[in-house]
Image 1 (cartoon, rainbow, N blue to C red):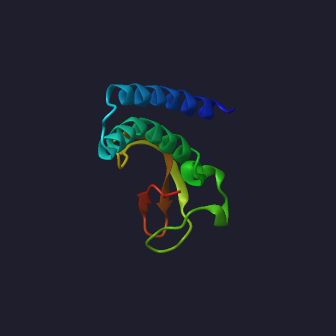
Image 2: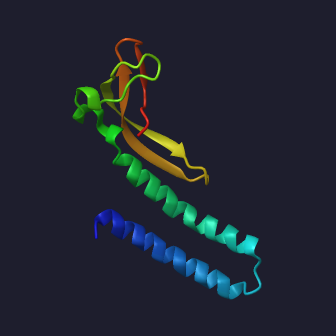
Length: 118
């Protein structure tokens, strides 16, 4: 098992315990209440997984990509070049903070920098 998977498993094990303990204390909980506690407890694991997986994306390091493998500018469609790395703090749909260090892209034609998706 990879280090990343170990980290996820450790988080999941903690979540499982919290949810099981909660359920023992709330034996008459409604489906909505159960959904709420599960969603609340899973949000940090989900955020960690999103952060880890996004950090491994193809565009995380544009300097490693050659020619046609590079993303294209959304405005003109020309291939972009790497323009350094930068840390970004983002918020997931479940209001969890994540931090990504990714390459910025630069379009020499349009003269704009942006973070490519992917």
